[in-house]
Image (cartoon, rainbow, N blue to C red; front, side, top):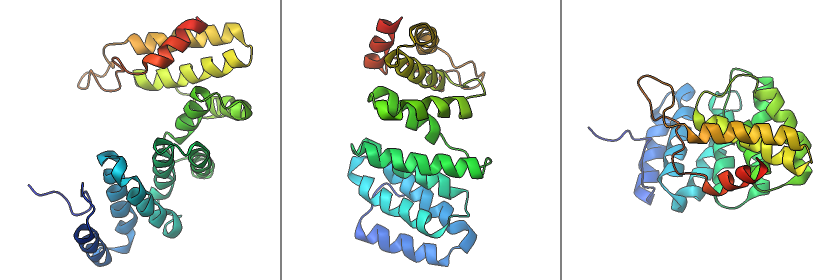
Length: 211
């Protein structure tokens, strides 16, 4: 079975020409979805495509603010910027996504947790107060996956520790490390989904020091 025309893992001039040609023939309401999926496919393919992915996300951001893909494009562009080392740029787009989610609660992404994680792991103290407030605002439901719980409680622990909230930080760090140690997700048909394995070794060491 061939790959969908909007899931290309290469982005040659020929790929681009064919993509935009087919997009023009697509229904208007479907276009933001196709552009977003193509951008996200390039994002996942590798760093060599980050710039092209950002161009596609910008296409959605600039033209389809009413689409559910708008907040996803904001968040995905932030992911690209973060992976490219542009931390301030990433935080700005995560914040735009978060603000959109406040206005449109049905349009959710992980932008809020990604924002907090970057703040916590990079020790961006000028954002600590904002990050803790975001955790309280968006983290009311128990994290579903071990990796989500690890990032949620790990972020809280790192920030609280830096702010001198020792007891709270220690409790959050214990919860984060317990999530990291889980070998199954708890989902019957996807037992390894969201399991951390050997990832985040450096953050685990920082959390263990807090404990």
